[in-house]
Image (cartoon, rainbow, N blue to C red; front, side, top):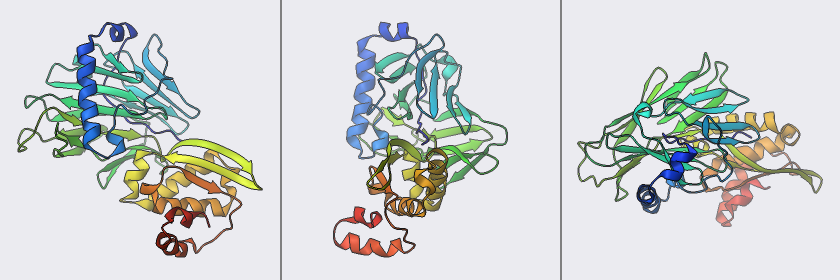
Length: 332
């Protein structure tokens, strides 16, 4: 299993968090909750499912250690957030980090800071290792370009595909990626935004100054996911076979729209690496391939090795849809 990660520029000391005034906290919460109410997209709910398990150290304001990924948010604003796994370690620098204020706690797993240029940024660490970036643009004086400097292993390939940004090793192994850029104003209206790549610097451009009818504040959010598989809930032997249940990342759902084959291959490689006993059966790969087809409608992915191998599984999809039980298509 490879954990999901999304990022939100900022960091805090425990003392600064305790000393923050409640008005700033309420303001940030209000803005982010307003965005959540204005959209059905779950990856835009910055304050949802944040971790209560992150610890603090002398150097780190938030440190979350899961089985196969560690997310470390440093106290020093000029240091990069570190995401470490058995594939690679990635560093992500935050916009305006050298000029930002001390960060303050918004809630468990979430910090925020003032950038003194008409923007604020938040860092939300989720229960599954997601690290969510949310930059708040308070008014028309706010800048339009937000740079994320990436610290990557030698030979890393950075490529764009359908608005997504993928990081891969020189051998083509997925390290992680950014879901498509988004920005919403206070009314929930989309504001034009895009990514630009210059070497290892990823820039989110928010074209708000020339946009008509913008209602401030604007919230803009690139999201970094580490892999396609988010969290394995269980792997067990039951009823004469292996069962494995897991969830997928926001990156997997976004990629399914433009390249489902890549979701399948990268996810299968991850599952086989971390769960070789369960995933040695041909039927498990077939069931995963089937779930990828309907990934946007899936919460939990369940694979069972006791089910027969069936190369013609696609022929079973129409009948399951007609019977109004599409989930059964992958449980032949």
